Length: 175
Ligand SMILES: Cc1cc2nc3c(=O)[nH]c(=O)nc-3n(C[C@H](O)[C@H](O)[C@H](O)COP(=O)(O)O)c2cc1C
Image (cartoon, rainbow, N blue to C red):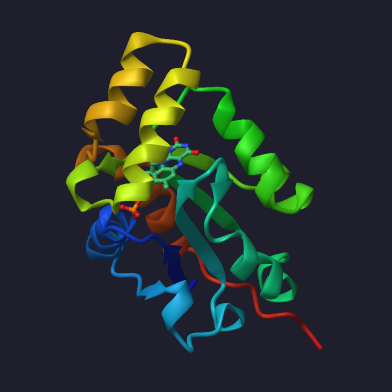
């Protein structure tokens, strides 16, 4: 079967994961906000995005292309400041995507990167204020000092899922 990777991200970490998955699977990689590629032309999809302000950044593209997406095997990945087992991820998924997509699709939470030196002054202030609301010292430090948890090895289960579907053939319907 034929698959593709569509992603959204702003500062490079999501794009980096999408490129790594593309290299490991041979699937084409598209920046969803900057492509004419049509998800309808593929049999399965990998949709990846950053999390900004507790929402999946690819959510509007998903809704705009929902007719093409809803019948296809789809894997979701998100790139953020929380760890893969953080229950917040489920909340953000539920708030961002159609229920059907969340129920049917495997999701992988990948470690992101926040380089505070690249943010403008009001974003830096936003992070300082946000740090006060965080429950643990570690989470406060993430917002005050930034973090880099981008990890190439974490794409392994995504690559395995894609390669399994790639190897499948679509049965030709009789009649
Ligand atoms: C303005 C802003 C808001 C963010 N909001 C969240 C958030 O709500 N939850 C979270 O876990 N990470 C949050 N992050 C961290 C990003 O998800 C992380 O930096 C990610 O790696 C960005 O992906 P990108 O490099 O592809 O843009 C935020 C980062 C920025 C700059």
